[in-house]
Length: 284
Image (tube, rainbow, N blue to C red; front, top):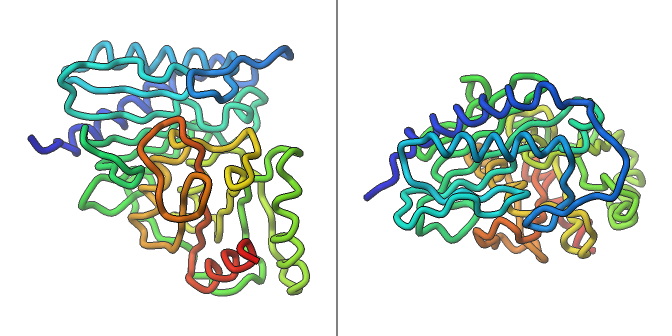
C-alpha cells in the first residue's frame, strides 16, 4: 500500500505545533553539570526532556501505526506492521534554546517502511519555534515557508555572501580554517555564521536567507557532529529546490543510509558557481 504522504505531512505539522507549545516554559532554563548522552550518542539537556516526552505523548494518540525514532530515545514506538517511519529531532538547536538564543526548532522527516536512503523521504517539516516559521514539503509538491514557495538566493559570486558553517565548537574550528583563509585571500566580503541548528540552516539556504552551508565535522570525526536525524528533513526540503548540494557520512559522496544515528556532513549553495568553488577548496 502506498504511503498517504499528505496525511502524514499533516500529522508532522500537528506534531511540530504540539512541540512548539511544549517548549514554552523551558526556553532559557539551563544549569551546569555533566552532560548526559541520548540513545543515539548526542548530548541531551533538560530542555530536551519535555520535547521527547511530547513526541511520545503525540504518537500514543494517533490512529496509524508508525516506527518513530528520536534523537534522545532512539526507537520509541515500533509497531509490528507500521505504515510510516518518522525520523525526528524534537529540538534542533538545543544549546540555543537552553540559553534563549534565537534559532531553534524541530525537524521531522517521514518515510515509507522500505526506505533506505536519507533522501527517500515522502514528507518533511522543519518548524522554527522562536519565529513561528514552518517549512514543509511532500512528494510531488513544492517546498514552502508558511505556505509560500521556497526559492534559493540568486547570488552568483562571493561578494557579501552569507555562509553558515559547522564550526560551532572550538574542537572543530581548525578544519574550517583552510576554507576561510581561501575565501579571505580572494578579497571577498564573506560573512561566516555559526547558527547551531542544522535543519534550520539547510532550510535557510532553501529559502534564500543563506547563500551557502558547510558542515564537514564528520569528515574529520570531530564530535559533536550532525547525525541523520539532524539533517533528514532539511536535506529533503533543500533537494526539492534543486539547489546544488552534496552530503554523506564520512565522505561527501552523496550516500547516506537511513540510519538515524549515522554521522552526517553536507555542503550546499544557492548557485553552481559558489558550490563548485567551496567543494574545490575543501578537496584541495
